[in-house]
Structure formats: structure tokens, C-alpha cells
Length: 147
Image (tube, rainbow, N blue to C red; front, side):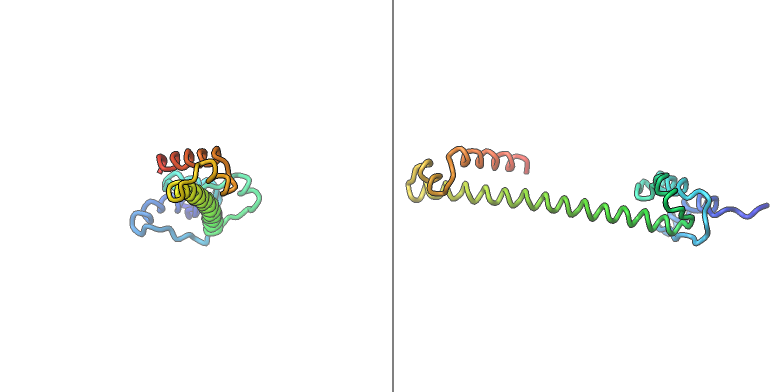
């Protein structure tokens, strides 16, 4: 009986490794069907970071499982970092805009209440318009409903 290929060993042993150890320690042996195995790992584990495209396979011709796992997880980590930065920038911009609108509306409201200025005069001295003030109030009301 011929010795089993690393691919066959992985397919047999992976479920037991994950059940017992909760992690996979890659082999340094060469594999014949790297993409298929990684796509199977993605399907079995639900972790799409293992998925490898045919183009990536052909470009790199990597046959060691460790190299594939490292590449797949590094790629997923980079995407996660990029997505996190984009989300952080978007959230920061939204919070900054909200804070600016609140400050503007509060300033207009405060001047009208405390100084007795009209809405038109208050907006004029703040180098704004009544329409901009009303729009800012509407936007803040929408944000308050969403939050």
C-alpha cells in the first residue's frame, strides 16, 4: 500500500485536529491539490480566508500548505486592517460632522434665546443662512432617530 499524500492526510486528520487542539499546525510536506484543500478548509471551517483563486495558485505555484495558509491569512488580515481604517475614517467623519452641526445649531439657538436676536440676524452674524440652519436641524433630527 502506497504512503498517503499530505493532501489525503490533511483531509482525514483536519476534523480531529480542530476538535482536539482547536488549531491547525501546517505540514512542511508538499501538496498536490493546495487550492482544493484550502477551499475545503474554508467550507468546513466557515472561514473564507482560506479560499484561494485559481489565478493566485497559477501565479505563485506554491505547494507547501504553510505557505498557502500564511498567504491566505495575511491577505485576510490586510483586508481587515484596510476595512477597519476605512470604517474608522467614515465613523470619524460622521461624528465630526455631527459635532459641527450640533455646535452650529446650539450657537444659533443660544444667541436667539440669550441675546434675543432673530433667527435671520443670528444666522447673518454667523455668516450663514436660515436655510442652512434649518437644514442642520433636520440632519441632526435624522441622526438622532438613526442612533
